[in-house]
Length: 377
Ligand SMILES: *Cc1c(COP(=O)(O)O)cnc(C)c1O
Image (cartoon, rainbow, N blue to C red; front, side, top):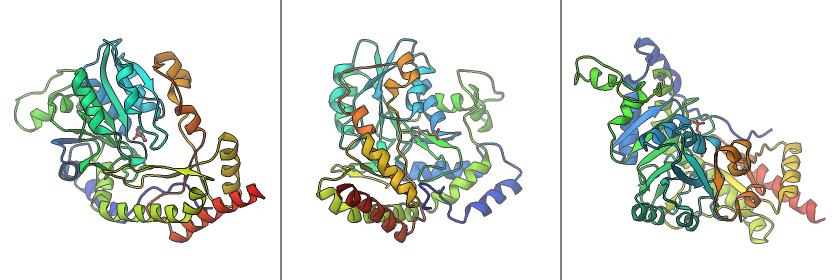
């Protein structure tokens, strides 16, 4: 069976984790966390990057930094992971879902302005599959209406938009280093800030000014603000650093697999049997996923079963949030659901991970092609 995902592993992680263990400094913000922060700041251009315990927690921190009041509204796509909306709901804000574009499955920038009300405070975009949203237009809307912009760039590490790293274009950017993402620490993430907000390190340290105390800037530390324990252990940071050091190699290998899929599936695409993602001009993606779209839900269900029967793992995802139980309870959809539900039912992700063999990509491609040959027969 070709698995759908294998967590990234480069070989240096073991030594770094051992080094962290023997440094007798295994709580957060030790040497490896600092190395990861430096790497992230250098490679993204963010003024400040902070490792977190998950991508979800990076989103929670971003929502707290937005200083939202109960009843404030945040505009976001419905086609995303629960954490994107949950972060804002935890602050008492109301998620206002809008439709996605069918070509990228990203928020449709044209749907944002009509959804703005006097209570709107922020826009949260999701760079689906590591392909950037139309950030120039989105930032212009935010400026016109005085809104904050949070980027859920959980899938977008090493991706860029017109030369700028995803997560550094809006006010706050959130990365995930979950084992299903391109770079991993098991569970973990990072908050990126284009302009460093001093509240972030307070929120991350249980609402205290401990970070300033450790730098010798105050002589005792106290409770100052809202917060929680959002800093990961050094063991996780050490594991991640082993991968960040290899980021170019991991990224190149994934892009290679992505290109192979693209070449292999081009005949089916050109014959109109499947759709696939568009990577717009100016967007450099990171091959976070390779997905195709079947004709409809019935065809996708049959294709997943066929792939499984022939030893190829594939998955679908995202029941649109506005139709999920919590989405109905906490949020609302603005405008028309032209694409979110229909396109989410067609989408199918093929195996994609660091170390995926060319022969396995070919087998996955051949199996998809065989399915469509048999379907026509
Ligand atoms: C993975 C993911 C998250 C959550 O990240 P975790 O590290 O698993 O908490 C949030 N949003 C999107 C779009 C994701 O893909």
